[in-house]
Length: 273
Ligand SMILES: *[C@@H]1O[C@H](CO)[C@@H](O)[C@H](O)[C@H]1NC(C)=O
Ligand SMILES: *[C@@H]1O[C@H](CO)[C@@H](O)[C@H](O)[C@H]1NC(C)=O
Ligand SMILES: *[C@@H]1O[C@H](CO)[C@@H](O)[C@H](O)[C@H]1NC(C)=O
Image (cartoon, rainbow, N blue to C red; front, side):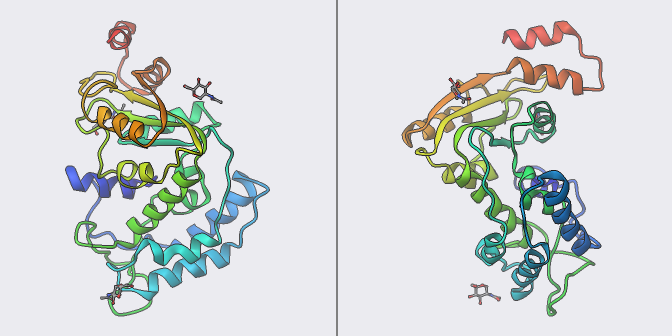
């Protein structure tokens, strides 16, 4: 998912590392249409999309409404031209574990995140909004995330996340952060949109990984904190599930990823917890 969206979610709890007044990403049209051609030519050859058509429906969705009034429904037409199927046992969901998710997805190439879908690939890290009184992008400034009921960027990711979860089938993987309280947050995209869109008839197992940062702290686990709430919700809805704390491969990946020295003793003590 996008860093922009991370920022939105972080804003609800902590702070936003991006400036609040960033405008629409410059050259957004070339970037979006270019990524679309890139996706169908190089990333996922074999799929066919009408990139210009997608762009047209994107613009229509943005320009129809004032910036704070773009709902997920406004993007329905656009999503209609971006439908995509993917095989079962591949979907990777995550919350507040973005860097780890990236290295995990790199070593487990069969796993797909939202960023690997066409819409995720095309709009990752971009910002957009309409000018106040004109049907053009506002490149100067976009409304504050928190000031908007229906922010155009948030609404797109909300719909994309819903579609991604609805299509998930077979075993799915969920990566949660054991070093924070509310590892499973009902206000995150996973907790507020994706979880509700998963279908227990299609999903065989929800395999949860709770992973603490290498240097700790270990605040939540499969048997502690909000993860327990998640498991209760899954059980209530008839999902089968597994939950693993500090999976060895995920800890080793963090070790490899960390610039600081990562002693074997550290790793062992983490794994023994
Ligand atoms: C916002 O969208 C709703 C539903 O599409 C519409 O009824 C309302 O008039 C819009 N508000 C503004 C200020 O455009
Ligand atoms: C957990 O969240 C903290 C705070 O956002 C972050 O610094 C850390 O890298 C995350 N840990 C993992 C394993 O993703
Ligand atoms: C699905 O997950 C369950 C529980 O972890 C596991 O036993 C099974 O082998 C998995 N199936 C596939 C196809 O990965």
